[in-house]
Image (cartoon, rainbow, N blue to C red):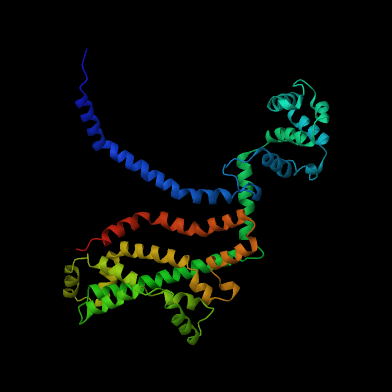
Length: 383
């Protein structure tokens, strides 16, 4: 008989902990945090494909009364539009013809076993026995019958089409126009801000001129000024330039960024200066060096900046709220405010509009995820 050494067991556990255990525990903890952060999004997505009366249910599966209501209104209602108003006798006769007397009898036996207090015989005739019970019990048994015709996929597909169609084609809110305005403004701001930030970053990182570092520090100091402080001067400037209530007024003030300049400058500092020297020897101008050498090598940094800029301007709320008065120029955040005012009691439509609002951001992140991680890693290292 072998004798187990307690010290050997402790040593094995300690070795397993340092090799695998601590990493397993950290991954479980991070997975729990990720699931916690994901739950609100999953609830929003689930609520967007539900009817209004099922919003407060945590379970994604509808309850039996909701299943029966859906079957009566959508499935049977296509053949008999007055079916929901029919008497219980006609409804029972319909299900008997549809399912057959044997299956109806089996469902009746199941119903009686689950409701023993009603005191009815399981082998009795449902047509006779239902006359002796209350209207609530009759409706409950009819729900049992309707549940046999229920399809979960058809249930969610119907309400998904209905909710998203009602939002997209709303007569009160021009959601399609708001979508276009947000994408149009965010795309132009992203393009201009990447261009202006790249040129400024090139001047601060590759060119040598008196006072360069002092000007850069002063430029960075503007990042400490809250946006609310500059809101009134910017608004007064837009008034003088007659850019109120216009696309130009939304785009131009956001086309310059100290953060973008700082991010691209730190990235351009990682590019070897020997490339500039070789290009100058070959007779290249500063613009050629910038456009043909530095800018292509800065593509990961530009992708990072474009993502941050697009996300920030796509969800911008306060500046469009102050600047825009016309309904056809509203962006999605402003449109969601008016949408909530008109449809505030219809949570399923609000959630459908919210899902449609964040779809472009999800597509953008998934498309450039690899470039985003690589750009952050490379830009954080100064060579």
